[in-house]
Image (cartoon, rainbow, N blue to C red; front, top):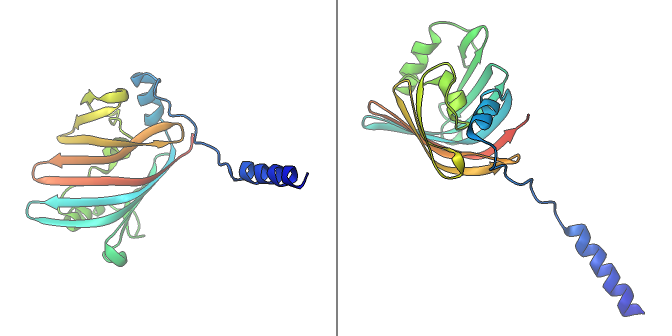
Length: 193
């Protein structure tokens, strides 16, 4: 009887340790449905890293992007927080490091980065879809996901995807345009419908 009680206790403990599995990835959604849903997505964030090469110069940074409706907040910082930049795009305009929105910010940003950041497009490209406001060319790969996107003079290559909230989202993408190469590696997605 003692053995049976020990066996039952052991089973109860093992059942308590079982973790829930993530929701299955929705790989059956048609491309058109998926694109429309992702382009309309208003609440998401990602944590990752960016590496930029402009000509012979380059730099790396952590990347934290928070999207709330049409407002974007982007944090870029080098090792140990050196050279931190906080960009905010709201209806009032673009602001840099907490200052008031200004038309001059885009020029300041371009000077700091060494190229014009496609901030408005990037909001969509990070999700693996084109910006609906500009014409684009798209090649799809396995699982009917973006493989390469060409839009507004930029080429965006998608190398890898990771599961997130029942779908798969880009985990690694490379942007190229006229001597500028931007690699983005996403470590974590948080997407809320």
